[in-house]
Length: 289
Image 1 (cartoon, rainbow, N blue to C red):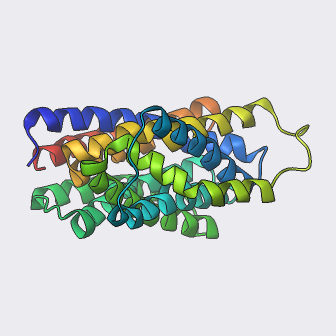
Image 2: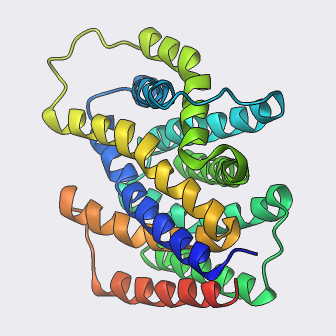
């Protein structure tokens, strides 16, 4: 059981991570306008991998043990490859607002894998408020008339499952290896493959790429793929994977505000009311954690 101080620090670090991740899908939408999904996925992982390698070398971190390689590969497959690629592909079929609403299912995915892979056993009251928060977000999406399921929706659901597994696996590993070390090693392991993907999908020219696309690529490479995880994995390890993971219920609200500000997608009072109720669910889930 985490101490009160450790739990509080975990929630603070987790909240910072969520705020950083909230810009991921809007930034991906901006980058999608100038780059193909394959190049974007390869480039963001390559840039983050080089930065992560620099950190590991600068602090002379020891190499992971053999028993840590498989969990690191799972983290790499989820956060460096699967989630970025699937969301970039999904955003070619969905609006940013619709894709962001799926993030509301990520806390449940993370919590379930925390039980399966992390050995956590949350209080029954925790599950009540976790499910309620997810239903509020899903209900809001349906009420907005999101329309029939598409291939983009399927990609987002797959991304949520893969990401939940990677979050739980990385947080479990962070307890012994360290939070920033986990994401850095995961990125380094993916570096040869992702650099190859970037080279194979290299654009014929750069004249068509607007400044906003470069900003989007920079954000998802530095903040979404590396800096956000420095806070996120540390927070999950400190405060508990399932419980701190509930902070992701707030991510759709933050993300939609950014989508409305940067991409001029509609934000209204119903969203504000829903996110207020979701925030209450997060607080209640913490109470039962």
